[in-house]
Image 1 (tube, rainbow, N blue to C red):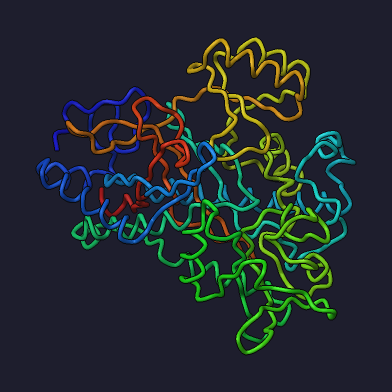
Image 2: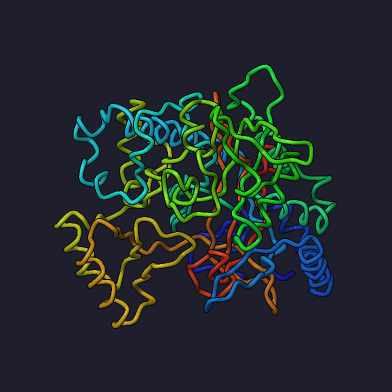
Length: 481
């Protein structure tokens, strides 16, 4: 592989501006340089076949159809120095402490609102605030047990927090599967390099869930609640349930008795369930409390949770902080609840509910990325520099009709990493989704899921929008320098 012509217009994760590998990436680049194009193509083909054989898929909802696709995997990994990652992980732990305190406060005394740090109007108009959760105190005071925070690096090398996903974050199974495939493709490098492992995630997730059990001292019965086979993340639901050795259930497999205990139907009769890792949205979780027409949830589940008979992860109502407008207040939350300066900076943002900031956004739609507060998967966005005049006019009308629902951010020059192109390495933009588990302590994955835009010059990395994935290697630079 010839790297002499490889250049990126942005900050590159492997190669610096002079065309030389970053210290942590040097062993990888040296190794790749000695492989022929044929050898690399064969290894990429091995990875593709492995992904198909393992059934690593996601579902795209398109034109009224559910289409299962294999997640594209690029064999050239992303490399992060351990020293940088240690600081990043500390910043993620700090964010999660503040976010859990915020959620608990919002459903409790609302001190942050009374102190005028967070506007009451934003809570009033929040589509994910659940009045049914007011006054509840979940185990350990934790609401968001599993979080996937999206990070991006700008053209100057600064790593920013882009958003926090606290409702039903997905993607961790792809992180783990990517590592399995990378080990098959590059077994020699894993024998000779200090690539930190990610294999303990399933055990860490199990321990996080088990810590919530209302029956301490007994082996908990844990179930993963899935909407079913047509959900886009069903592969992940199966993968995680199997990896943890817990039950995979649908709503019809569970019921809540007159004693407010949640039971699972089995061939041997009802069995009590202590903890539910739910991958069903709040609105469909309990037809007694939320959507009465839901057939995905369990009638009485919130009643059981309120009574302390079952633990739910993530807790219903945690999505109040999974809001791209609320996200902009996280630095203030950190200062308010923790008395600390944020370790990880937020991507600068403009709030359309603020008249002056809205005016700026409307005047610069061709330069900004505009996002709705509660969409995910890359849907409903406007990428200003790539937009048409008609699209900008549509967003102008949307913003003016509902300014609370929109925020904007500058179009960052996202960092790149090489993918294996037809003629050699080619730069592609990417982001990073680490996963954070909160219990009495906070665990952060070593690296995370690197999502990469497979299309040239594209800034959209979401799998639902044609993006792919890479393995993420956190390497101790002291050992490779």
